[in-house]
Length: 140
Image: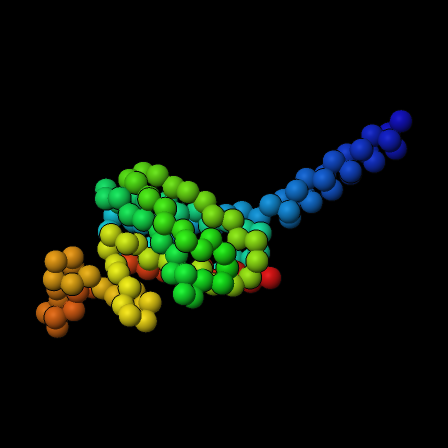
């Protein structure tokens, strides 16, 4: 009888380990109390998810930069309201560049540019801040 019980316990533990390996934890990209994604860049493995979390008082959105997106979720334009979050699961390698459409825009080469005088705070050198953008790199 003890042999069967210990075998069942070992099989149960092996099953839990396999489940943990099959479902890697999601990484987070947070919008803190200011207009930026933190971290700006992350690397994940195929099968992992990224959770976008908005801790800012303002709404933001996550928009895929499709001209450079090779990791899936093309055409994404997800509203991220205050105190909300959403997850994206990535199923193949590539890059997922994104930006906030409220706080950044794309130039003619599909590169995020900082907001201008009507959408940012100008520093003493005449710059209007960093564009609110980021990138997820998905590796095998």
